Each structure stands twice: as C-alpha cells, then as structure tokens.
Image (cartoon, rainbow, N blue to C red):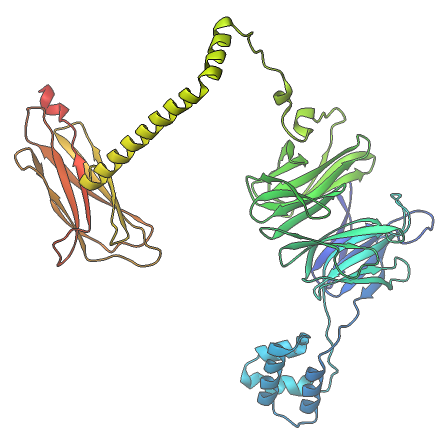
Length: 528
C-alpha cells in the first residue's frame, strides 16, 4: 500500500498509504504559480491529497443515515434491556425487511459465534453507531474552462450508489447524484459550470449517463454481460465486456458495433494524440497483447512480456505520444510513439472496406448473352414452373430415401425414441481384419442410463468376431463411450455383408437401438 512517483523510469519518492487505493488522479486545484498539479488518491472512505509530493489534505466521505430501528435496538442493548441473543434476532429481522442497510458494526455482530457475541456487545454498546461508505472509483471534471491546466473538480463514486462532485479548493460537495447500483467505472467529460456528462458503469451490468442539474441518470445502456472497461471517444462510448467483446454505443444508448476479441479484457484507455488529431481506444488483453482500435477497426497490435493491468497514453516529459503500462507481475513499461508512425487509412475507415468501392472489370455484353436474356424474359413463367417441378421431385426423392434409411436402419448413426441414446459406428481397416468401433452417447440432460448390453448379428460363414456381446457401463450424460471389437473376414470371394447391431436392456428382448453396418470388401484376401 504505497504511492510511488517516478521521474523517467527512476523511482523519485515513495509514500505509505493507510489502506488499499481504489483510484488515483492528478488535477489542478488552484491558479497559483507555478502551475503544479496535485495528486488525489482514493482509499477506503478517504481521499488523500498530495501537493508538491507531500501530504496536503484528507477528505472524508459524509456519514450515511442510520436505520432508526437499528439505533433503537442498540439503545436497548446499551441499557441492558435485551440480551445478545435477542439483539441478534432483532437485527436479523431488520436486515431482511428494512430499506436502509445495517451499519458495519451490526453486520460484524451478526457474523459472530454465540460465545463471542456478549463480549462484542459489551465492547461496542457505549459507542455511537455510524454508517460509513467507501469509494469505488474516482475521476476529474473541469470547473469552468477546457484548457489542459484548468482547475478541475473531483468526481467520486461510492458503494452507497452515490456520485459526488467536490470543490477543488474547499473540498465541499458541489453536487450529489444517485444511481440504481454501485458504480465501478467512470468517464467524465465537459465542464461543471457549463455542461457535463458522467458516464458510469455499475455493478448491475448497466451503464448510466448523468448530466448537469439532473440528480438521477438521463440515459441507461443495458449490456449483455458485465463491463470491465469504459472509454468515451467523442460522443460515443466504447465498452469492454466480460464476454470478450468490445462494443460501441451512442451517448443515448444506441448500439453501433461489436468486435469479438481473442482474449478477456484486462485494461482500457483512451489514445488522444492532439498533434495528429487521432483518437483511438487502447485495449489490454489477457494474452499479453495491447490492441489499438479506431471505431471497430483494428489499427495496431503491441506485444507485451506480461499481462497489462493498467494503461495510460499522453505527454510524458517532452514526448507527446507516450504509452505507459503496468503489468500483472509488478512491472512498469514506457513506450514512445515513433514520429514516423503511419496509421493506415484502410484500417481506420469506418464502414465497408475500400476494396468494395473498386469497380469490377465486367466484360461487354455479347450477342449470345442478349439472346439468352430475351429468351428468359419471354419464357419466364414456363422456366419458373419447370424449375419448381424439378425442385419438388428432388425433395420427394430425398424424403423417400430418408424414410427408407430410417426404416431399414442403413445409416451408420442411429438414435432411440424411447431412450435418450445415440450411436454411430466406424469401420477401420482394409481386410481381412477390421476394427469396428461403436460410439454410444447419452443425450439426456441430467439422468444416467444403465443396465444396457450390445449384441452383434452377422453371417458366421463370412465373418468371425472376437466378442459379439458387450456389457455397457453406466452412461453419464454428454460423454462419448467407445466400444471396440475386431471382425475377421473368412471368405476370399470378394463379397461383403451387413452386420446388425442391437442395443438391449437387460431382461428385455426388444432392442432399444438398431443399426446396420455395411462392411467393406476385404482387399487383403482379394489380392491374395
């Protein structure tokens, strides 16, 4: 739990934090010279402000309303009017029915064993009840100017489903907005005194857009899976989802496109190169790659030695195009964009590829083509009727052949109507020895099949089998069970026959499944 500051790639300073950080931003909090940004670190219920790399201020989130029923119950416990077991039963009833959540003290008390409850109540009953939330995400919002060094407000999302906008100088709450679920990701654009939009991805899998003078969300984007990354590019919102997809939406929630990724998303960031007027989305993947997308088109791919966990693009020192990444193993990588780098137009152009707009070299119309076209126009009805007649005859022939195959079981694959079974047979070898493999499968969803046997019926003058009867083990749903046997051809006349396969249930004579296997001609005996 440390805040480390690097100059170049060398560690410059290190500060110890009291709790695990959930977010870090840099912002200008005043107009004083020299223009030095401050660092805000969100950790637990606090925001630690560092100025000139030294601790400057600590902001604490306001306490939440305590459930009056919970307050009354603890007051009774304080006066020794109820015992710890009665206190636990009453708190459990409040937790299940009340709209206001219980405090951390009550939740911890409900988790304790009965022998520890009395000591816990004696230790805490004299202290006032406080209900505190924690910070889940943090960002910045320009106050009244759009310049890079303009004064910015802090925007924080909390576990209590609230979004606060803080004054950069007095650190008072300028605005409070509510969400249907706890926020996890946030992207902010605009100016607080003019107009702004706060795009928030929440834990319920939806994205909400908050606007100025609106205490509740203006728009809602419902996703098919939970968001793991959120970047706003212009007026569009690009979301990385848990199902390995990258999706683009308008700010009103209309879906524009979807890109399927080769691996899960681990980090996302905006690439905004002001010198070239180029904007794209950087996507870190679990396969140790970073993809660069402009709209839905892949522009570039960067290989990394480890999985990227966070990513940032911008000015670093004198270099305007610098990409800084941290990795899963604790590494820090700095990459600088080449000044001669060219982003190909064919990758960046939205819509169909450029090759689609190239005219084909179509040959000129010949006299034969013109005569054929005139004949089709004059006899269109008769040609259509003839086509429909031939198509109907073809369908009828296919249906008859299919019914015949089902009735005689001539196909190598068979299925049962009474039992959830499927079987197919495979014959391997050139002869005179063949390997016959039966694949049995239970097609049920959750019920196993047991007490089955497999029997073979064949012409004993033509073939001999090592095992003509098998006991089938218990068939677990979804698994394939191969049964192997060997068939020996006894004739040298170059003829073959059908081997019948029956799947039976023990104690019953009627087969559950039947298949006929057409054995190939034994080439080994024919050649000899």
